[in-house]
Length: 252
Figure 1: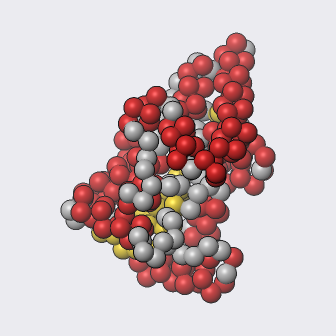
Figure 2: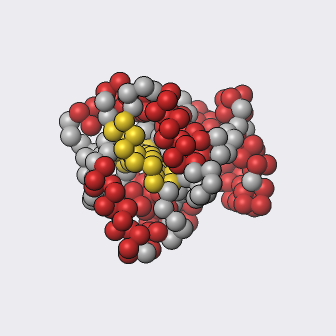
Figure 3: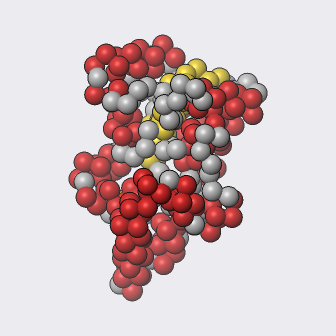
């Protein structure tokens, strides 16, 4: 279905995992994008971002307002599918199937090393999980030829089946598009702050806020300097616009 000009796949989290596993078994790679209100607002302003989302192999509704809008429009999505949940369910499935995963991104911190810590925690939680890479390249690596070549070499050597790309939208999507040429049989998940969440470097909102669609308030209050303006100036108006469009769609 289409929400805010973006196509969304009507799948549950379990169905999304099954799609990825089936594709991997058939030797097909892919890209998962997780649209929320922030991504919809950015995509409205950029034809390039809309094209990247449209070209992805699986687009799931990460934001609760997308699920609400689908219900208002009369074509309800089955569930919210957050990238921060998919990293866990995909890792569990990967452990059971003997798949290889890699983590790319997270917050650069030489002391806390959240990317490596997240890899260790995933392996501890899911015995048998094969984490073949935990890479947190420096800022601007995607514009530096030597840094980019080093990353490409790591990806090629690791040969992962799944790559969690936690660089924030839209950087993680741009990087994924380029890396798919290096690992065409792998699946890439743009997962935002999920690597930091796994490592405990950042706190995710309580479960009740995730269920009620108020997780964004927690995020905004956790990082007010970075997020207050973006959420209040761009995302709240986008959510209102999205619901209004859904209402008009229902009436027509």
